[in-house]
Length: 366
Ligand code: HOC
Figure 1 (tube, rainbow, N blue to C red):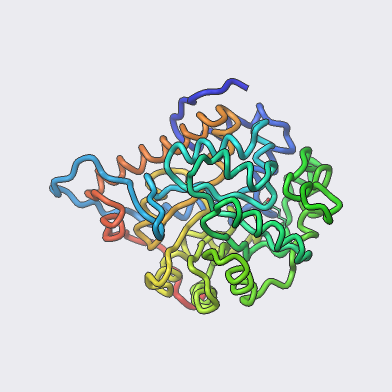
Figure 2: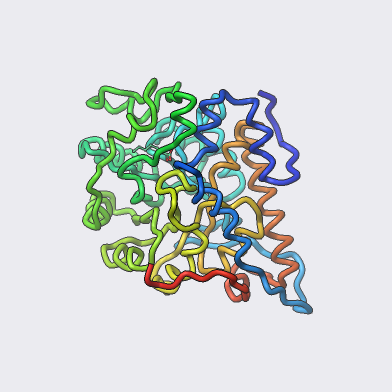
């Protein structure tokens, strides 16, 4: 693997660049979505349903990407979305991602199903802010053990995954017969677990999931850890309201990159009704389908406070390790900066005042 900064013309083309470098099953697992991949494709297409109305003559130069989540200062509103098994893309997996994301002054979200341990990823992040993404297991001993690790390692929030009580039907994985080729180190390190995940397929991994997740799990995780819980996988205004009522300190609008329920709406299309329901009570993080700075701008203008993405970072990681990760974030930042300048917005707060012309609107009854 040639390491180092990578030249990026556009983020969408990274997928084609890594396709032949990666083992087919690993590429299919990362790139693929559920069933016909309709929702996955809609996630990106949906940004074309809204147009940015630019403002001019506003005395703007050098737009400022800095923002804050709670007391965490960030150099950009673009953050790393959680994803399992970075070892599929790079021999040092999450360690390189952590170093790259921290160097760019933003947040890394670390999956329960990482190929490196929770404490080691925290160390590699070198003081950068990290969230821990919990997939609740049907083994409460494991949930407590891994949450203890996240707390002890200084993670800033627990991202409670709400849309993954069962795996979506991923046809690419079925066709390639994909099995995770590496241990998931947190599973391996948990003494009572009996499996490291190595050699299992995604459905076998999902067999560990707690099926009957409920609102009570928010309070259970919050009181166990004393960390803010952000519920991830929210796709409707009523669920956002219920999650906040149950103690969620953040709402993560996501359909898991189209990897879970196929046939559901694009994440971007449900964002306005959720933002209206949340009404600034807690921050909103958005993911699913972001491939351009203008997509991030549109999500911010529709009520998101932070915008997350995973697949492009996987591709950057594969192409250039820590520097590849940095290159992807820098490219996103560059596109967002250009969009901000041309739209007449100096700050992230200004983006939120920008008018979007929406061609398709979902109402709050979703
Ligand atoms: C409960 C098992 O986010 C994906 C990952 C899933 C990780 C395994 C979860 O592939 O979407």
